[in-house]
Every structure is written in C-alpha cells, then in structure tokens.
Image (cartoon, rainbow, N blue to C red):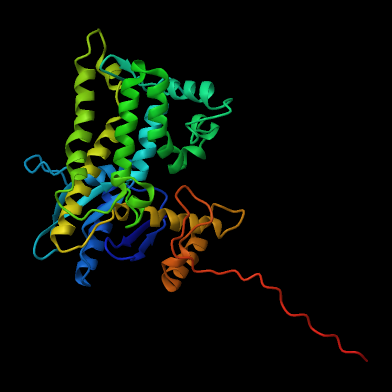
Length: 373
C-alpha cells in the first residue's frame, strides 16, 4: 500500500489523504501522485511545506528528478501551485536515517561485513561495541551502560527495525563508557556516537516540557532562527562527515576507490543526512519567520504513517499481513473516527500516548439480589 498522509507542523492534524494498492513503485509513478496532492491541498487552503519519506530507492529517485545543478537544490524545489511562490522541501525520515546509520556501523567488522569504517588513523568498528557489551555489561553486577542488551548487539530482522534500539547505540552513556574504558583507540567511534546522538536529539524535540524534564537542552523546542543548534547541524555536524570523506580519500596506501568507499557510510545514508539537515533547518526558520511561536522538530518525521501501518497490522490479530480489502476498511475507519485510532499496540516506533482516550474502570459491579420463591 502506498499511503499519502497530511501532517501539521503547528497543529495536531494527522490525516491519511490517499492510498493506492501496488505491487511496486517507481519515481515516475510517484511524481504525478505527489504533485497532484500538492495541487489539491493548495486549492483547499493548506500550504504544503515539505515531503517526508524513507530512504527507499524510488523516493530518492523522486528527489533527484527535481535537481538543477545551477540551483544546487538537492533538498528542495519550487512549488508551482503556491502563491506567492514557495519552496517545497524534501526530508529523509530521521528515525529511518538513525537505523540506516546503525546498520552501516554494525556491518563494519561484523554482521554482513560490507563496511570497514576508518577515520584519521583509527577504526570505527562494531567489534568495539561488542567488546564493551561482553566485557562490561553482560556479566557485570554493576553496569553504567544500562541501555545495552543482547538485542542491541545481535541484530535480527525484527530488532533491526526498532528505532529505539538504534538510538540507544548512539547514546551518550555508550560514548562515555567507550571513552572511559578504552581511551584513544576508540576516539573516532566516540566522536561518531556523540554527533549522531546530538543530531537525533536536535531533530526529535517532541514537547515543550521534554528539554527541562530530561535536562537536555538539545530536546527543547525551537523559538529563534538564531538557535545555536541550527548552526551546529549545518556546520559542525555536516563538516564532521566532510572531514571523514577527505580523510578516507587522502589515506596513504594502495586502496581502490571501492575499498575507500567502504571506509565511510553508504552514499545513500550520507546524502539522506545532508538532505534532512538542510531541509529541516530551513523549514524551522521559515516557520518562525512566518509567525510560529515555536517549532517541534518531531513534526517533520513520518511516525504517524508508521503508526497507521502498525494499526493496520494489529487489527488483524495473528494475521499481521492484512489484505488490500482489510486495509481499505481500516483506512475508512481512520477517516471517519479520526487520528485517535492510529496508535498501535506494537510497532517499531514509540507507543506513548500523551492524551489517553480510553479509561478502564475496574470498580466491582453491585450484586443483584436473588428473588426467593
């Protein structure tokens, strides 16, 4: 099922706009559908600002169809249906980027072994995470890196889809443990984890209270176009990967071009990071300039769409591969009842509901008196 969903930035709007049954998808097929949706939304008064999707090949191809070398617009295009003319930004879903980044990391020296990550004379290897877990977590009575479990280390098709497991690998507690226990040999691994951790925090602000509750200023809402986090993302974060690429290409030795490419993240992951950073930073500044009091960057991801697919699956009970007709019926229910039915019981995203809509009362019912004959 190809589903198009509308999500508000400063409102709680989450509405499945259209769905299409398809065996496969291509950029040529996406192009008229998405631009037709943009045209219709502009007609009814809504103003599309961005398109968010995962890093599937057709989605990336759709982005590239709009590139103009003279404009250097690899992350935006002009919206011909807007008046006055406005940009439409492309965003590679940040939770999916966290998973693909973790996958590249996990394949360095382990699992599929398709990567040999290296930067400035030091290896960036999954074996370092495995060593930390086996030596200081698995059999330890007291563990500082409490977030690590066997599910984080030995990835299965199911655990590889869990965003929280990927995010916890790139946590400050893991970086601190590596730095304290292994020192200089894991310096570049620690730098990578810290950058990805801050990247995810900056682009995953969820509420006005989260920053103060977690004592993490990176999770606060955005209220100024001069917020230092925006400068960090555009400069320090992207410069880290630019310096990494330069280091790999200038590494002494008889390495082929393919071997050097294995020393850094995949081209698709790197481009996705650049696209998302540039687009979200410009979207935040655009919204604040347009009069928004604050912006929460969690609104730029596709979690509501993931919730919808999770809801489709769990409504089928033991059958988590529903038919097109079952999805069509559920899709109609979502349109009638509203977005409150989207929350799945299980799935690969957070299932926290900030405003519960169901209250269970377990008060005992009064006993009925039996009539005597």
